[in-house]
Length: 320
Image (cartoon, rainbow, N blue to C red; front, top):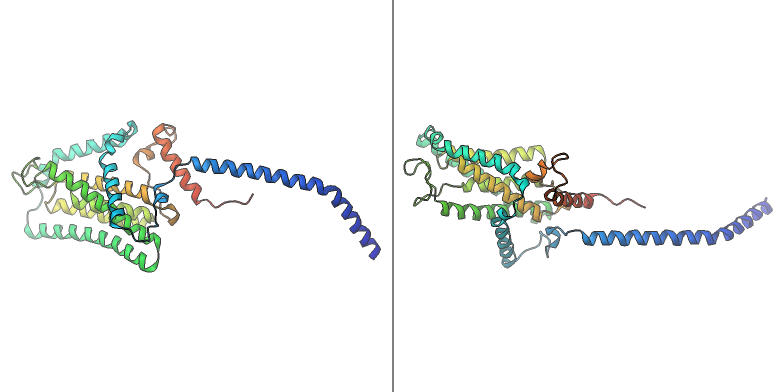
């Protein structure tokens, strides 16, 4: 038995010695292929655009100086105000319907507002309701930011910070438009909502812009159906209440809400860290860029590439 085992060991050793050179060559070839694949991957990753959230000098959970926040605000405002210059032909797919709807509201603003109740108690009720709705959204976002720092939850911190950032940028845009266009409120003048009148501050609605900007960030950071229902439902209640309180015309709240939503999309898309969770915020143009509807067009390719990068980052690496 011992002799047989010894013979088998010697035989195996001889076979191993004979195949050792081939095995060594095979390993060297495998390593070379792996090196080539890794080099190609590194070149590919270097050619990919770096998301803005990765370019930030410090994580969102750390304190920022006033200068850093101010510089970021100026950058965002520059991009927001110059965004019409970057419109593409595909944007007409949503701009034309939205513009048509807004035009219809402008035409019917006066008649609709005149049929609303003018009871002081009811007007006060809706006015308080709109203020409470905005306060709830801002308070919720601010609470998440504070609790995120206290609990060391970076997702909460980001949600609160981006919601506040979106609200601040929306406020700046809407205030600039209000004091430039100077539209009279429903209770001012003859109630027709004339523009370029002294004291006019109706168009667009600040309440609607702020509410929809905060709601947009919350609904995408936590994209569950209940969160979306609560966030967008509350924003809708704010917009409707501003009209019922005769503080705004329907077109004021529609345009204000659209501005808030678009600004929130810009802030979220630029600074959201996908590693924390949340959903990809698809632009209306990209949603319409479905297969068979121009998905290979140049204006769609950039968004598709960004979404691919996000999905790739979330996909766990598989062993070779």
